[in-house]
Each structure stands twice: as C-alpha cells, then as structure tokens.
Length: 71
Image (tube, rainbow, N blue to C red; front, side, top):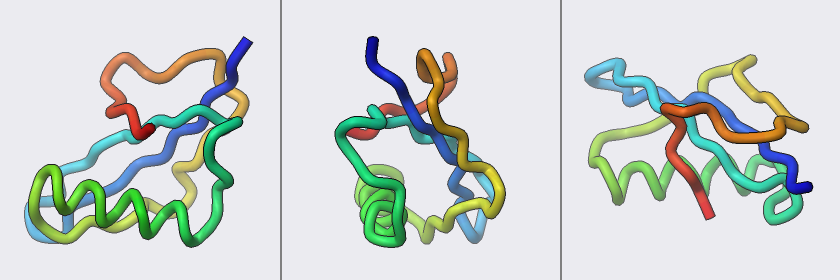
C-alpha cells in the first residue's frame, strides 16, 4: 500500500496556506523537492510560495481531504 507525505506552503503576500501531498516512493523530501513545489505553486496559483517550517508529515496512509496532489 502506498504511503504519502505532505507539507504546508504559504503564499507570502496573502498568507494563503496550501497543503501539498505526494507519494513517498516518488519523491525524496529534500531542498530540491521543496523548491520544485514552490515553483509549481507559483506557476499554478501565482505569487511567491514558501514552505511552512515544521509542517512536514510522512508515512501517511492517504492525503488530507483538502490537500493538493503533487505528482
């Protein structure tokens, strides 16, 4: 059964928070992944996105209902 990771990202101007979820076996949680997700959010939603420190969760059985899926 697949395991998932998720982390919160915040838009700098509006303070909008988005929870992003991905399959644990597809991506390694590192600085490169965080930067890639920030740029992806910028392209999808506009603005400047940054990771929220301390929000990383791993080994989840599923993504949160309100999470955005990152493939």
